[in-house]
Image (cartoon, rainbow, N blue to C red; front, side):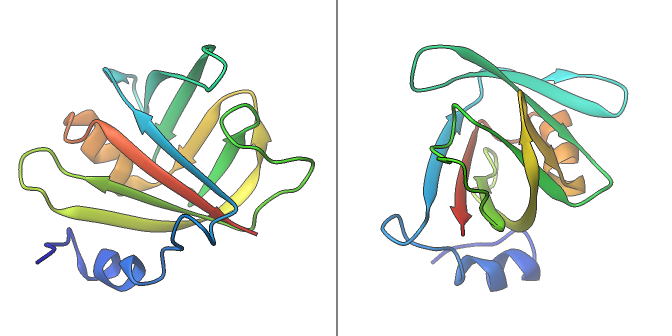
Amino acid sequence: MKVFFDKLSETLYGEIPDTSSASNKVMLHIEQFDVGQSYVTAKVENRFGDIIKLNIEGGLQGIELQETLFKLKSRQPRFAYIMITLSDSGKILVRKLPVLGVKDWLLIYEDDLFLLAVKDAYDEIDIRTVD
């Protein structure tokens, strides 16, 4: 039985597209978060072996995708589902974020993901986009 972080996560979990119906699926392994004043950053490796920066901050709800992590082919998905599993409790957090654009960094704007990253509460992020 799955244990969820909150009611929203439980509701959204049923909406997450499976791998075949998601336009993109990316699993990111985070070695270490670097904590700034109002954000956290991490470095992840893309499929070409290049290091890409990830930035998570609170406030505005949304995500700005990074081209080499996602095979966008000149299209922009409408939404991205983000799923993490908390290291200590195994609880699952799911969020559905509007795609705001494409940047050189992967930027995620979501309060709970930010606060949990500050606590180093997870080390993988599963992102699935929907056109």
